[in-house]
Length: 152
Image (tube, rainbow, N blue to C red):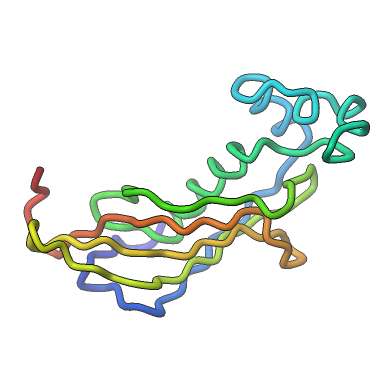
């Protein structure tokens, strides 16, 4: 993990790239069996006749992996804490996909009511090795300045 990033360290245009995560069929089935038990996520044979035309990871599984990769690539001091955002899955994640996240700071809006805190707009794309976008995520994250109070 990289050194913790404070608000003071961030500027619009900063870019970050995560490490990789390889998706396996077993991992896709295990996650979906527990959290999104639909046949196109849990049964490779049944998935062939689905909208996806084959086994596809749950979007929530892709989101969870993205979160893990974001925490490693964007090690915000005090944590990667979300305050809303937009999320889409342009194409399914499949067994064998090797994912990574590319993130870019798009805006930093200082809080008017909580000094030392800001909302940081980030554009995070989860891509496979071929550059295909598997998830497009635009979260607003909370960042603190060095020495600031956590506040309520």
